[in-house]
Image 1: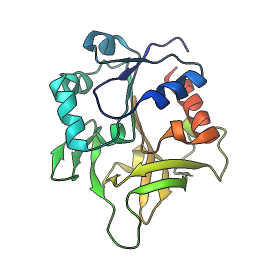
Image 2: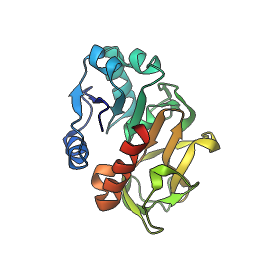
Image 3: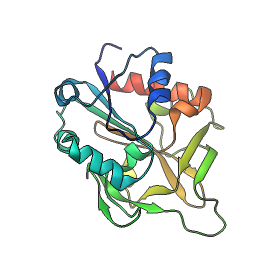
Image 4: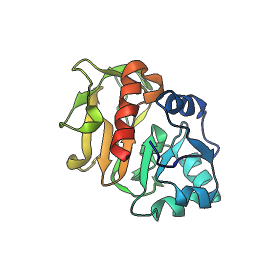
Length: 204
């Protein structure tokens, strides 16, 4: 892959396992908060773990929220875990907070009750449609999640894969040149590695 790939460094979460995962599939991904480099990239990865409000505040402090909202038309934007949630309009995590608004939807908490929260561990990834992001995955592909909130009220046409955790949790979404993974592909073993290979083919 010859495209320039950037991972945004905005001080939220440990990103090194994700960097190593990309390296294993043949891509040297540059970690940076340099706006010029981010704007010039072909592919931008928005990672993240932790709280939605904190992450948005970090992006705003660095001026990166504006950069992402006004990304070049040719550029791919990939959100992973919290990074995917930040792509949506609104989050209800510890209050109501505006996201980047690049995807239509609302981030809500799992209902308290019989479900263990956070949703942590392996869950079957089920396909919503035939898509090149799911190429070479069998029907029993499992991926690794760590989250207490999930995307709801999304556009049905954007849903590629989901997992059942009391509700259908959007696992992979895509609209135009924006892709989101709610689970951690870098922690999802051979399935996650195949997903990253598929991702590289799509963005290439």
